[in-house]
Image (cartoon, rainbow, N blue to C red; front, side):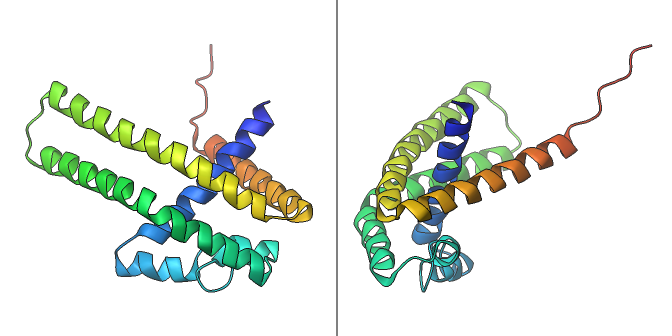
Length: 162
């Protein structure tokens, strides 16, 4: 069960990065979108590694085009909420109730984004062949292992007992 959850979390992360790139407005992020994650122009890393066919690339592009109107406002709301929090922090004032309200607003937006991205990931996974799905699962497993290794390296050593 833990491995299934980890694979789902990694798939969601991959789609999150793809969605963020597809919806970004800054020049640097637009450049990343052109490179993309799923292969070819606008499809990038995963598409190249998975060997997506032209038809699959078109399907992924169609999914993202169809979903952009749903994701873009959520991404904009999240960016605005984060900006408000940054501005509040820069003011030097601290009101716990105010910060909690801002955090709750961000949590609601993130919840909706997570649900939408999981739905989109599900649609994109359907485009893949069984071999591509297996390869994606292996890539995700390797990424999860690297992530776990980094976490372990960052954890301070437990104090020795005397």
